[in-house]
Length: 295
Ligand code: SF4
Image 1 (cartoon, protein in one colour):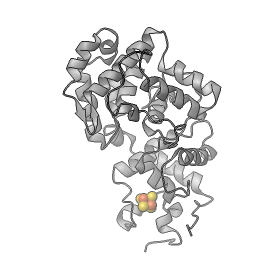
Image 2 (cartoon, helix red, strand yellow):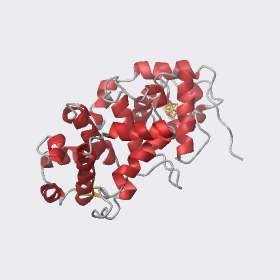
Image 3 (cartoon, protein in one colour):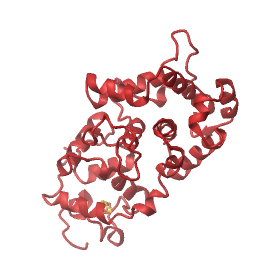
Image 4 (cartoon, helix red, strand yellow):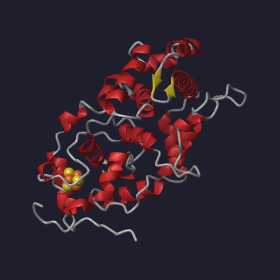
């Protein structure tokens, strides 16, 4: 039987202390948003840099930042102009040798074609997301975005390259994906508080969902914000509900701190008093449950 673990009644205060003490500057340098921001000079270029960067957000943060940098170099430092002024055939040529984990240049070139077609039809990624969300909820907004990005530009247009569609899973797919990368993209676009970009104004911050990578899932599970051991859309909703009880207006402000607590090594993911000692959420941590003081 799975043992249910819940945070202490003082958890909200503990989480706020973790947030307030967090060395944002240290972790910002390591985060993909640090290389997105210089490319995101206006709302259009913010969407374009953001969706490329979120698509590449697989693996460790150093490799992700390197991949975004190589993509920006291929675009002569301006991903907006890359989409709107460089012909598709030239984009394909420049991206031919691109690799990041299992993501290939031909997939990014196809994404660039999709973005070109979207902007040519006077739509934006925000309007696609917002229309989907209006018809249902946040998951429907992600679904609308995923569907539009992964479908061919025209009914008889070229088919997406191998593996392309899998880059844009939707929470409404039968797998109920947590859609971490699209959810992260929407966080960047909606939240106006640094370091996020705040270019979208039609989606309230209280509606955001947590981008559930394995660092966030690990700590959320160990703090009792979810009892689910697998990452799925249901887990995303459960963790988000718990964070919304603490800050209904901006629940996802805690995402950066929870994520980078894991990335930075501030959380060893095991009981280690040297590191866990000063951890503000130690009273709520499953690993320390029932151990009120030093082991
Ligand atoms: S107490 Fe230790 S293991 Fe638990 S969340 Fe804090 S740093 Fe991580």
